Amino acid sequence: MAQANVFQVALNTLNHAGKLGNIDSRVLEILQAPKRIMQFRIPLTLDDGSFKVFQAYRVHYCDALGPCKNGTRIRPNLTLDEIKALAIFMTIKHCAADIPAGGAKGGIQADPSTLSNNDMERLIRAFVRNLQPKGPWVDVPGADIGTGEQAMAWMLDEYEQITGNHCPPAINDKPPILGGSLGGEAATGVGVFKVLIRAASDMKMNVKESSAVVQGFGQVGSVLASLLHEEGCRIVAVSDVFGGAYSPSGIDIGKLKDHVAETGKVPGFPGADVISNEEIFGIESDILVPAAVQSVIHKGNAKDVKATLIVEGANGPVTTEADEDLLENGVTIVPDVIANSGGATVCHFERIQGLSDMYWDLETVNKRLEQRILKAYQDAVTVAREFETPSIRTGAWIHALRKLSKAMKLRGWV
Image (cartoon, rainbow, N blue to C red):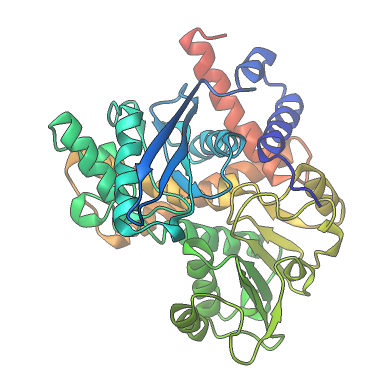
């Protein structure tokens, strides 16, 4: 089945929430497209002697609440629509979590697995140069799929070479020794776990006696799976880009991590059956966490979902049509803009620490993360009840759109 256009999915959600929430039509008109799109091409002669030109993007969606921030995604099939969708998701996440920032996203169409370390460094540095970065009060790039602490360290160094100033808050998701926040790498997975526990409690579901499926075993999924396993939850299936592992009696996540470290993939884990990424959504479980990429649960497979609680670790993993079908079937969905906002939240903490030159211990970071993400969840639930909708997603978007509307009106934009 053809994958849904993730930007159109985002706009569908925006317009549905806007209509239900009686948001000013002028505000919605502004939000139908990004405020600013930067596109450029990066030519590189690679270490193997080949020559390639890489397409790159940076999208500022809306800055009514503050400077634009976050991620930089690198993957082979990256599209501008994907970056636009991620930028609007980031706009809503910041609103939902009471973060005074706008939403942004960047990306490079490339396959990191085919690039040498030197190729990757030169590509990242060229990306920063082409952005013509203006600093922490305008646009703060961060990490995403295909990038991490090392890439952000290169970004920071390039920014500082260009400007001649040391400025840690200019880039997010850096190593702590360069001004990054403790807990940053695990933040998204930790946030998903905290929200999952609260949502399960609201449903009178005992996680220790429940089963779970985790689709995606990268930075988010592996952290979330480890925390669920430690909590006593029986994780019956896990997958990555290569496929999945299924064991009705439960998978030992610690041993699975060792297996992945040794083989580079989830399939082939001893004692578990090999399953496909499509099959994983139909496995019997109480909890399902899609923690990979967008639009993986769609009209074609939503009917196969057995879980009663879906917590979105990825951005936009459930399409608009699937969302409606799942809600009709009584499935509770904790949306991406709440569930996976832990990374955006700790990026906010990182910028605060960098601007003040005062750095927090891990306990402080995690305590403040838990407080903020659970408040965002409760705000979304409260607004959903106000509008008598079973959709926590709709509640989160209405809550965010109210803030954006107020800010735009105060600024005189509408």
